[in-house]
Length: 438
Image 1 (cartoon, rainbow, N blue to C red):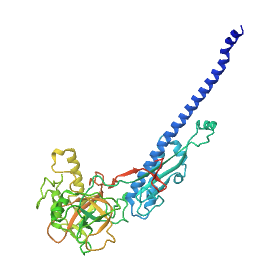
Image 2: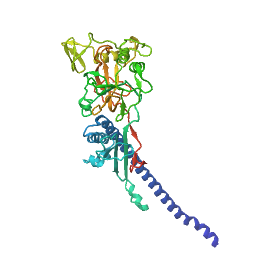
Image 3: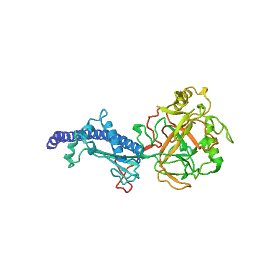
Image 4: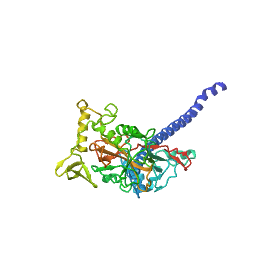
């Protein structure tokens, strides 16, 4: 009888234990749900912050590439990076980020520059800086259920951080340029005001190339060709371009003189003119081969057509009221041919010369030289190049800063760099230690 009574009382005692287990299980489930909510909130804001930091670094590096060599390159790059970060922070859904930034954007975001992707990074950075690092060390977030962690002895703050490093790609792709270096002024590079190393859209420039150090050295030099020399190699290079990967900030080697006959023969193929051992198969003409005749000639530093000074107005060339065939005419025809390729023969963009622009100041000597690279410029080949005579000149109309493939694009004022600006893995402590936040 006693045994029977004990057996009947056992379930009532177990019922209280089950309730305790249920309560603990529910508490654990609620805790996991709460942490999942906070964790998702952190992940979303970390992604948004990283996107803003990435965009800021890319913008800063792009600006740095454009203003490299100016006295305030660091400040301009930082301003561009901060402005891009602010615009991203103000995008829809980023209320917390905007509130965290407040009125102290410069204190919330740190922008630094370096000559190497490994550092050391600082502001305003070295004069040869090429890389930009953007850092947000602390972005505090709203604590929904984060305080429940204190039940387990943790007082960790709810915050995220992000860092990004951007700079130029190691090489230009594709690496195709014309074998001419044109001298530019590193102090006159302001793309926002349509000034590119002293050249502006529509400028008619006489590229006068001769032996460095001579009275007729002019404003351009012939690049030294890899794997070839002599008239045949020069002719081929000017009719087809050369595969040469060149990086802004590096230097290129030039030849001590100019073999002008092959230069003229190679360039004139782009206009459908074939003199010497060149043909349309290896050196096709451009879609547009028209140019004004008689030719524009230089009277000292003044271009003239039939005795009248040539004037450029938004890229439209004229002389004494006579309109000349210019880059705008080429652009219109190129667009028409692109829409109706069956109506045109030849190859697109052949008259657009993608040349290296270098800093010739301080380059001395009458032989081969090495010239620092400032960037790349697209010059429209205005007319045929005279093979004879004493003036070794190529008349080119500056269109814009040029990409590595020589394509000028439809909008002359559109910013475009000769290199791809890309993100890199961020390294900390200037000792090639990768950051966990990039």
